[in-house]
Image: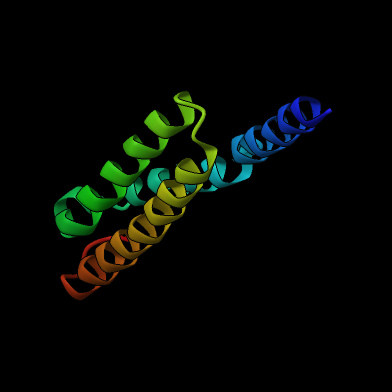
Length: 100
């Protein structure tokens, strides 16, 4: 009887750790990176762009490894840095008289 409970508890804990794939977080990060790319973020905000790109790549690795908790965190970071990079790029373009 104790062995059955142990197996049941182990199963529940393992299933709880797996979680569900972060489809929405992945999609939002992808859109944010695309917008930053279109705003030439790699040129006007290279630091934030690099952080966004690295976080997204790490998120994809975690996703493939089925570490959905880490993947979600990385995708959220990628979104934040991509949005910063896009905003800085647009401001710098505007200040220099470039097209937004």
